[in-house]
Image (cartoon, rainbow, N blue to C red; front, side, top):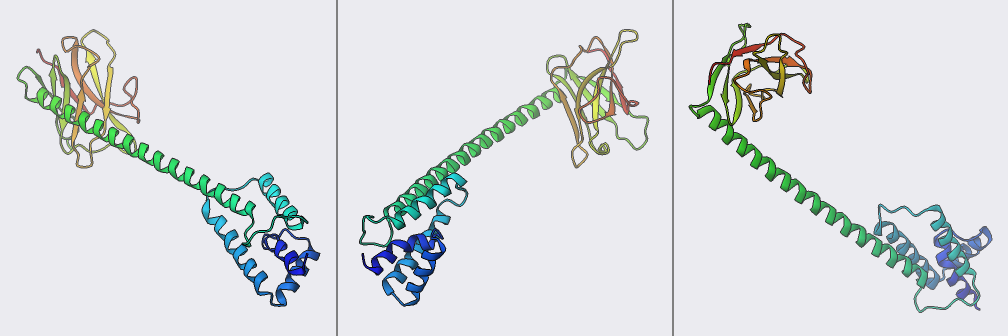
Length: 260
């Protein structure tokens, strides 16, 4: 085997840093002599190795895989009967490129499919939310405008608080509405209570709501925890986020429930 052929077999291992110091020095001395063919093989090997990094940017080879790869490179570089190729790129390196390309394409397809599924789920959720909001607005309108609804003014003993108004429909539920309602501090919320007519009856907790940024307050209770006939009054208190089982503050608004 001529010196040129011997060095050609060591070029790939040299680029990957898989040669021992003696072999590396020999290759560098040969390249310094100006061998055009080996210099071209070195440049092609460097280009191919650089492309491996871009084929799968998120994949990190394990230490075991990298060790085996270096062992394979070293063994091929030193093999006496290695199959010669008309090109400077060996078969094992093309196989590595193909494997990484397949892995990248598969990963990219999975990413695209996952993004599509997420987008479809978001679209369905948005459609459900829009449908629910539409139904809620229709129900609120029906309760407020239906003459069978009982009107319940809810006053506050605080001069700076606006008056709220509740409408209770025996079939559709309760709507409590108001404008320019100040938001509770922090994450605290406003909670509705039903005060039973029975003597010493404890307030029954209902839903919670914070007014929006413009101060609009519109609370819809489709399934009140008590009937209108058994309820003496409605009250609203300020409670911690998530509500309370029993009132922790004095009611801000109270309204007496009349006869339906």
